[in-house]
Image (cartoon, rainbow, N blue to C red; front, top):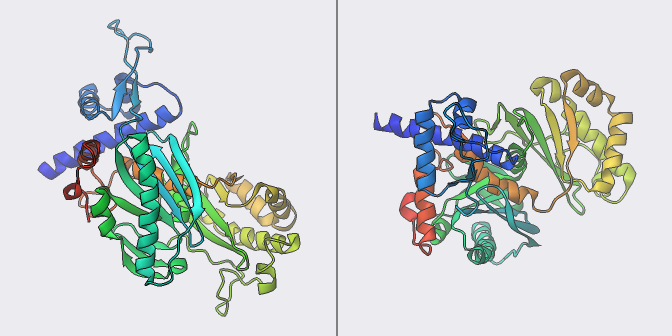
Length: 403
């Protein structure tokens, strides 16, 4: 019974905060009555949860700007407390990194791009941990200037991540295989350390966007330009509002329709094309055609509301649209048949790091199945304790963070 009560309490908090958080992002005021009607919950249930959130300083009461109810009382607006806490988001690639610090309501407070400090004189595992620590130290010095409690560090990296067991299954760029999350960093900072595949961070970013009707089904296609190895591709799938991992956490590992077993790359395109894809327009057009011919096969199977393309500079967007129009007619036709649309995103340095940070908040809003055991599942009681511990001059709160 205790477990069920805790589960119900966390579920109610998640439902209510999810509604309040997204409406807060849309600049829409909400009262207790609004939340009760929106979620079809008893007013007493909503009032109890709101009081818990007020007591823990996660939300604030604002001015009574809503219309009066039948009793003549004006409902009081509720908003997310921007100073409740902040999250460090990191995008870590072998050649560069991005930092994005945002507060709990999703507002970006700090961003920075840098060159990854690789050390070749140690093992891949030691190298990765040193790199991560150096970047977290840099980000944490900015957190101290902000004087806002740190809630979590979240990193997006290329590779397959088992977010339940806390293992980097494989990351070819960093030479990692079956590498457990470096828990020594959890001990040092006293906050949860979460990893995610970089393409999936794009999905968490879209999931946090402020569209009036949040999309439930979409594909995120992350592309990364490399000097001589062409353009790498990763795909993330979100269905029914949930980012899909798959039984081995490898959903989204991309292989094009042109790929052959003899090829080491993701496509069957000639090396002459791959090595010049970033410098010669004809090569780039070949790559675009190969990519969208492959994506075409996904559309009738998944029926996404939107296909989001990330990572391509704005000066290439016209070429992409031209190739789709003239050389990949099937893609356009099937998208129209399925009522889907293509959105080519502006190339923002901090987007993946921002998505990693927003992942921490969005995961709190998800309702896990009873009995779920995952290192990425943090309860609200744990969040409140982490916040209080870090607010007290970073008293080590290791005992409340899962290792």
